[in-house]
Length: 411
Image (tube, rainbow, N blue to C red; front, side, top):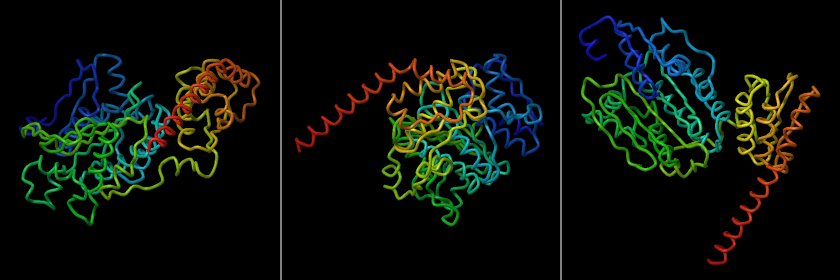
């Protein structure tokens, strides 16, 4: 791209025929460069991967569309496990993307509430930087992935704007290299203009990622910096002018299956975080029961793969609050397969155990006798497994209390 732009060519073709894997960070960098070149009048053609599976990901995740909007229509459907790459230009569009991200996570993986809150905060802050600092005429891009079986969530935010080094130097002109500019920008309270922002977004996102055992990468201009749970202090590298990125790409990954003490992570440096989150604003957990409309959450009622997001979301909502009931609302459903009923209700019964299931889960609006029979059989077939899971939890809790007692007596 560098040579094409230098030689003032009208455009060129991205050839992905041999591509076997589509990495979100690499694709975001390509799209950002394409956006920057397109602004100068260049156009692009795209040859998709020959591998059918890779081509499907390439097109369904919207990378193809954002590289060549003329030749590829956007995908508005939401595949399992990721949020298709989307462009945002307004606050309303950004809010919609953040909310959809939280829903994807709730439906796809075991997530702790504090981890979801940290993810929500980081995505909001990084994506909002595009409005506040980037001067990006095309807005920003967001891509979210929940890798299967890893219990981690990844997001990429990218823009073809001014870039961090250029922006930060407007307030700190002595930062001569791109690497020193990004290193400085990662410090809490550093911003180009205090009247525009507080300088918390990059610093807070870095702290959340490393404290949770995740990772954080920022690439802008000729510099890239990276940190993770094993290497808490960011390390950096400088690229040649030919490899410079026109804009900014931020990558964030966080494990979501254990708690993150956000106050300890952020407030120690004076970074504020709201005491409410997506679950509060969407489900009002402190005020009422949560109703999960099964027909809206499941793509069908015929398969296990369609039922899994319903069960995972119900489990996450039970774990997010100690008192609110979760209502599985079967309104409008007149048939389910045994597999679907077992995936949603049977496995949920086994996971929670009979006592907690009875206390926290409400099955509502089943009017068809065949559906009622399938759901009832699913719970019956999982009863022994659920009772054993319950006894195991009780044994673990008893051991925990004994350890606490021994520590208390030893003080």
